[in-house]
Image (cartoon, rainbow, N blue to C red):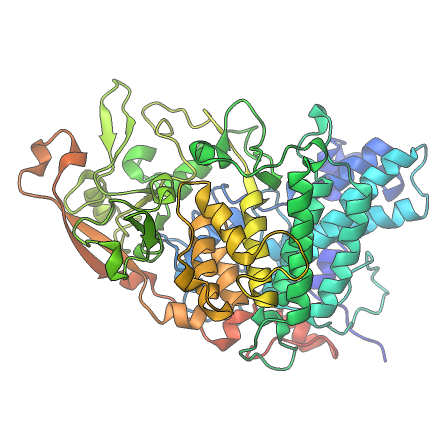
Length: 617
C-alpha cells in the first residue's frame, strides 16, 4: 500500500542545503550541489557545523522560539511578567492544534540558528548528521585522512544522538531516524517505545565515545568531546529509567522507575565520575569549589568553566549578548528603555526560593521544619549559600550607575522597579514575584555601565554537578540511599553530600536517608536547587510524573512592604520590610495527564497509518 509522506517530520528530514550555502559563504546563485558540499574535509565539516548553530541557546532573547522568556517559566521555578510571553498559552495546558509552529512544542516552521523550536532544530540536525554519516561510511568525501574522518563521524554520531534525545524526551519513542529520507521512501514508520529509542541512540553515543578526542586544540575549542558524549549517555539513560518513560504508546499512567535502566544509569554516571577524577584525558573537568561557584555560569579570560562538560560556546559573541541578558534577566530600570526588550524579564518564584534550606546549629533544614528557625518576616538569613548566588531579593544592592552611585533592587511595593512594572503597558497585566535572578548576571550588566560583555556566558547543557545528581538518583532507585553493591566507591547519599559540601552545606540528615522513598524527595530538592534555571526542572517534573501534584499548588511570590518614608533612605538594603506571600494568579499552570508528553504533529498523526499520536491528544 502506498503510504503518505510525513507533512512535517519528514519534510524537516528532507530539508535542503540552503543553510550550508550560508555557512560556507558561497553565493547561492552558484547552486551548491551535495557533491560540492562533500568535496573536501573542510566543506564537510562546515556543513556538519550547522548542528552547532542550531543548538538551543538558553540565553538568547527568544530561546527555543519563546520570545523573551525561557522554558523555566513553564515550571514552578520561574515566572514571566511580560504580557506577550508564550507561557500565557502554554500554561493553559491546551496544546491541541498548537503543535505545528508553537515554540517549544513546535514541529513546523524552519530551523533557526540560536532560536528555533527545540524539536524543529533537532530534526534538522539529525538530517545533517545522517547526510554526513552516509557520505563518510561510503567513502564519498575525497582526500580525507582517517583522523579527519573519525573526527567528523564522532561529531555526527554525537549530534544525531543528542538531537534524537531532544525529541524523544518531549514526545516519547520515535522511529529510528538513521537516514536522510528521499521523497519516494516509505516513511509511514512505526514509533518505537522510549526504551527502544534510547537503545538506538546509545549505539550512536558509544560510537562517538570511541571516536571523539578528550580535548581539541585552541582553535577548535567548543567542539564536542569524549567527555560530553559520556555525559549525554549518562543523562539519556537516567531519563530512560524514569517513571514517565516506562509508558507505552497506548496509554499514559503512573509507573515506577525501571530497575534495569536505573542500574545502567548508575553505571554510566559512575563511568563519567571516574573519568573526571582521572583527569578527563586532559580536559580538566572538575567540581568547582564554593568560592568559584558564580563563575561556573559566566567566565572571564577562559572560554568555559572547568565544571562545564557539554555546552554551547557563547552564541552571541559576534553581535553582543546584551539583548539576551536584558530580555531574560533584567527589569526595566536596569535594562534601560521602555519597549518590549527593556520591560521583559523572567523572575524566580517563591516556590523555588522556599526550596533553599536554612542553616541552624550546624545542620540544614527545610523551611517548614521547626528546627530551622525560619522566620517568614526575616526570610533571607542563614539560607543555603546557593540562594545568595542565585537570587536578588527586594532592597538588595545590585550594581552602580554611571556616576558610581549604588543601585538597589526595588521590586518592593512602591519601589522604583515595582512602580515601573505595574504601570508599563508591557507588564502591567501580569504579577511580579518580587525577585530577580542573579545566577546569570553580574552587577555591571546594566544600561548605566553597559558592561554586558564583561563576562562570557555559555549555554551549559551538562556540568559536573549534574553527573553527581544523576548518579545519586540512579543509585537510589537501583540500590537505595546507602548501598554500593557494585563497588563504585560512592553511595547515593555520598554523591549528594559532595554537591552540598562544596558550597559549605552540611550533609543530609541521616533521618532522610532511611529509605529509597524518603531520600528520593531530598534528591529532587537538591536537584531543583543546584540546577535552578538550567532548563532541567520542567523536564524533571514531567519525567518524574509529579507535575500534576506540583502544579496543584499555587505559583507564589512575595510582596515586600517598606516602612513609611522609605523613599528618603539611600541604602535600601537597610529597610525593615514587612513581607506578605501571595499567589501569582497570572502564573498558574494547567497540567493534566496528557501533558506529560507533547503531542506529535497533528497532521502527521492524522495522515499516516502507523504513526501514532500520543495518548489524550
